[in-house]
Length: 352
Image 1: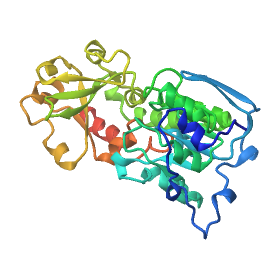
Image 2: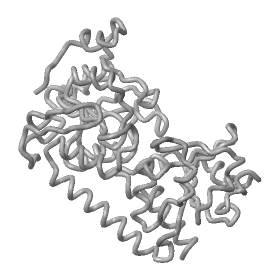
Image 3: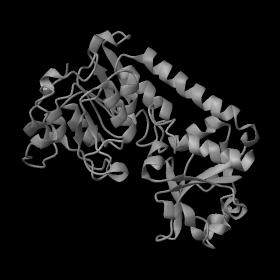
């Protein structure tokens, strides 16, 4: 199904020398059978599209010759998208920031457990995608690597492509729309019909939430993370999926967010405390990582310069898991109670 090279050859392309195999990262429980006996996908029985499938993306063109049986994922969202259309990846990146080293996001773990499926090998990702553990991918022995929302460089893509076909992002790193992540994943797996159903379910869910928030329709927002130690805030742009999906609730990104944008097409930019008065939205969405941060958010004179903060119109997403559920939302996390539903509840309190 793909041109397969040895670990030495693949990693040698980067001239990084000899790498030891991380065998412990891919061992399977002897009671459940070896990885050779555990299929990552339902195979042709679940695929509805005709193979081969060709996908053109920012880093090249990928041909998937037949229904994948050992899928690996990298980056964000594709693990959930694969599971949502009926495929269980054999390898996925660890989520250090959210739940710690060698751990899965809770909604991903719950889905594997609900299926009675063996958990995937967890790829080391201590640098948030800046480096790729090639040897761990080789050990996982995938026949397809999904990375439609990732930061893969051309060099990383080329090396991974010597291990298995790789589906990268369509245009730029880290800005693939949430729905395109689902569509691309489903397409690569030959399950476009299932992908369309997932999108219909998400759209219906969000439309139902929006119907309960008529007074919030048309209200503008800015989504930020405060960084007091740096004397600035991180502002998410309309290109970021976490912003785009919220517009399905009838709210819109404030024009000032785009006017102040210095990211040149990126998903965030920074704004100094001296400029916060320019962030002129009807309400603010603040991503906070601890209860203490949430409780004290907006008390400083600097943040009071933001009109929405001064007015008390602030929606808070609290805790690493909750923030991750909407950063950006995925096929399995869009209805996580402390994420988008909590945002909707707070909007109802402000505009109810």
